[in-house]
Image (cartoon, rainbow, N blue to C red; front, side, top):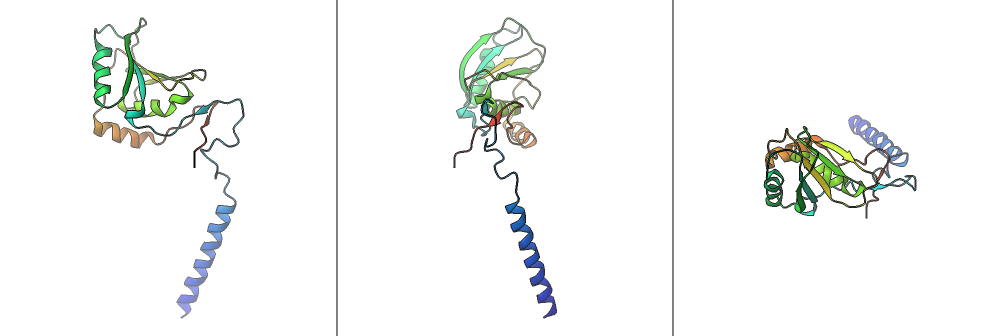
Length: 171
């Protein structure tokens, strides 16, 4: 009987702690964009599926046809390839992802296809949701489906870049 009283008391104390924690929670609006300065851009941080991601594939190397072959690889993975072209300026990196606030979640997904080895160029003034994927001299191939899934697990959820706030979540 005494053990039941102790267990009952512990349950009551635990319940009180939970209620206090919920009432005093200062992060209850985290990710909702509330409390964000009015002039800051709202970044889309809802992780997208490849079928919902629009990209331009640009060849930043001297390898002929690279943009076309990688664009085909992305199409086979259900990405919406808007454009493929050569870029005059060659780059040495694996890739560079260029995007604006509406492309944050799409760029996050694309990071996994480069195993987080791409450089990122966030442009706060860019107004579309398209991500420019610039392939560089160190590019070998896109990650496999298994590697992408593992990389996404390592990357976690998309985060609003500094100087921006997450778009409010629709309830």
